[in-house]
Length: 369
Image 1 (tube, rainbow, N blue to C red):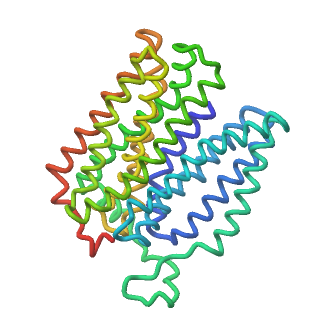
Image 2 (image 1 turned 90 degrees about the horizontal axis):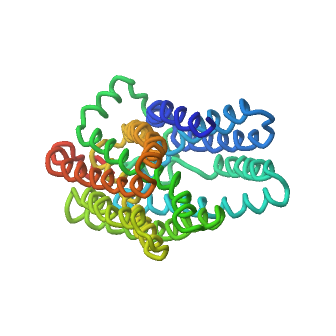
Image 3 (image 1 turned 90 degrees about the vertical axis):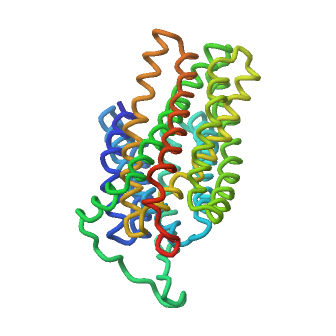
């Protein structure tokens, strides 16, 4: 119930958060977002009932997180014009580090000081960090303004109808909604069910299964996201559609490794599968939003990001339930193997976007940044 509340609220709020990121100062939205989710984390540590957990860990946390990524990606795109995929890749590595590091720290704190302690510690640290960001995070100056001059206080207010029209008129944006949906479906399915598969098929303890499913996968994803960012930026300078080529290739190459980790009867080969999937998942993560910015102007980028995230969450939320149903009727290995088909579908949609829609929707670098 807590997880469902989080995803539902996040999915509903993401388009709103995206539009807000296009009409207010993105740096301030980012700071407010960090402060909100840190406060929600802190309050989770004081929860005394399931209802409070749903409010703080579900709804309130989603409120904070939903407003972060659209503005953060849009701001990174403003600062890094020719290398935005690599800049976003560096930003993405924070997620991978957090997935491993927070688990280790939270496990230690929870084991020694009780389950509430990680929420209290992370919440307080987050609020301190939000305070530092308030003074340090700045808006970039316009291209025609000397860097020494202060940036404008806020962007021009864009009518909601104009933002909606700009986003939904671009078929490439809508296609990338489906592509990201495929990627999130696979990722959510993996995170939800891979530890269970390792526990049931290979007899690993729950602790061993949790570590094995995340460590090798995330480590390889870290490598993949750095490689993918550099490759994406390099190819985009040679060919406007270069970033979509990287995205499509990443999804295609995920497919055999997803099949391997789902069908293998040998633990070593299964780990090879989850590591290979991590590598190419990282490549996909590195370039999707950078590719999105190739087909949408800067002033609409936060709105477009919000729409893409919302669609992806709605698609991805189906994965745990669907794979659970498949587990009951056909076995969990079959369910994870079928995730490869979703990854392959994402590659096909990416290719169709490149062939049929990208050229018409492409925004020249001088305008796109």
